Image (cartoon, rainbow, N blue to C red; front, side):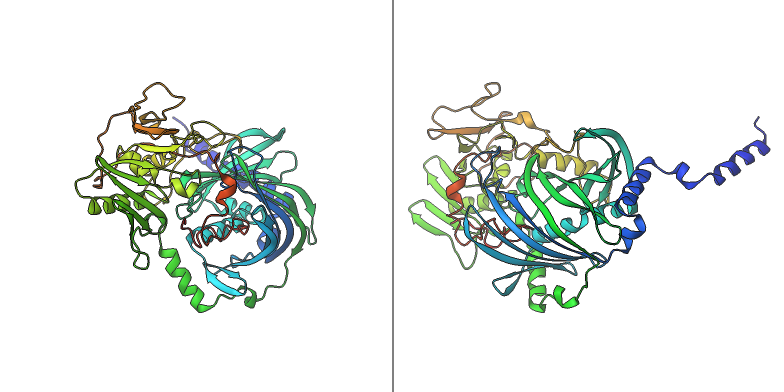
Length: 518
């Protein structure tokens, strides 16, 4: 039997050990990174930053193929960050592939409201742009280290080698996002911030499910007041180079005026209304744009995104499957109402544009064949066809496993390196349930004459029956389709009626302004 005196002595010794001796290695690594930037106290005392710089966006969704080189839009910007109140004001000008002249926009994040000034008129933005702007502040180097230190689940992971340099890796959660920091083991400075999170209200990125974003830093300089700050930033999404910025000037603790962050009251009200709109709930039939019968048996639904219904003797063909699963479910309801007794026999998708394919998974889940472009076949850097809904399946399964109250999904198959990821990498559950009719002979079900010439047919290999226009009580979690953006990227920039070009996307503020295909 151990002596009570000995146990008391051991307990007293443990109590007298320095806190650092019992500290998790991850927390120690982050404290060292904060010290390398100028010290935790200096970072917490920062009131704001003013940054000026130049950069470019790779138009991943608009380019001709899923691998570089991509079409490019150039930018010059100035932004002011109020770090204590979480406010951001950014003025940017852009020019490039679809914009011959420099055009500007001012975007504002203040008090949980996202707004933009287009040509002298303030307009409310939506939930997608709010998320973009909040992430721009949250994962910046001056904030992300403090967020890590404040996180209750901060933990060390295995060291790795990044850019041929040893790095410490720590992980934590920030709101819905899973975050990993890669900290240079030699300098202590953060090299990269990797996040995995969904963008459910973004018509471009919601398609991919959980999106992996890697923000990397280099060219660290010593600024006035002892702050060390990176002058070059690179964003990659799902393994592809997305955005690059070179900071040409840094002002530490600039004067901050409330007037610079003021949002008109009517814009605040408009923002609340826009934020309440869910992409999955976008209307198929609008009072101001009723369905049009363009020919007998051919009906155009000019809702949030154009869809056509073509009635044939043996069923209805749906042309386009855009936006979201809920949108497609309402299209099916509309088809059943307009053509009772006819099942929906096929869906034709005419584009590789990401919003065009956001609703295809609903049709695949109901066993409806989907016809897609030849060039959008499986493979390629963005994963190809027959993978679009895998991430959605993974999220559904993870949501069931996640502890109540977390409010986000788990991820699987996480790589050590924050690069080389591709869409769908986090969830291949159900991947065998669907096959593309070219390049994957096994388990294919290709009906002779079912597909128009030059198109592929996707069907459920499991042989689930076609439910037609009726909504399933609970659609099975099977993959849908995803396009590798290889086709007609150039001309698409000119035929979206009323949509502002992607040039003005420093925080992707304009993507949902008029997201309706003409």
